[in-house]
Image 1 (cartoon, helix red, strand yellow):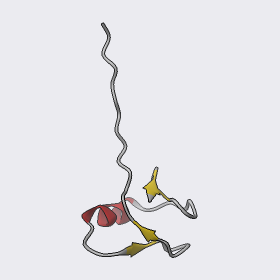
Image 2 (image 1 turned 135 degrees about the vertical axis):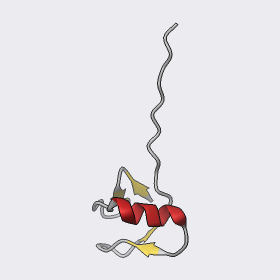
Image 3 (image 1 turned 120 degrees about the vertical axis):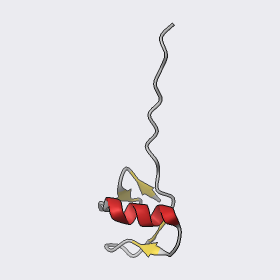
Image 4 (image 1 turned 90 degrees about the horizontal axis):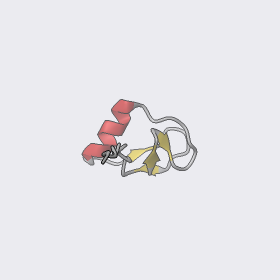
Amino acid sequence: MVKRGACGGCFNSIPPQRQAEIREKKKIIVCEHCGRVLADVEDQVIVEKTRR
């Protein structure tokens, strides 16, 4: 899994273009450093609290 822009195994940075390719799910992408299959790019969701 790609978390915060990095490989979940070796924690090396994954370039934004590569993350976009992983999201497309058209081919299998492996980490250039450790060889793990990369999947499920974690999207950053910002939740805003409303004041009452």
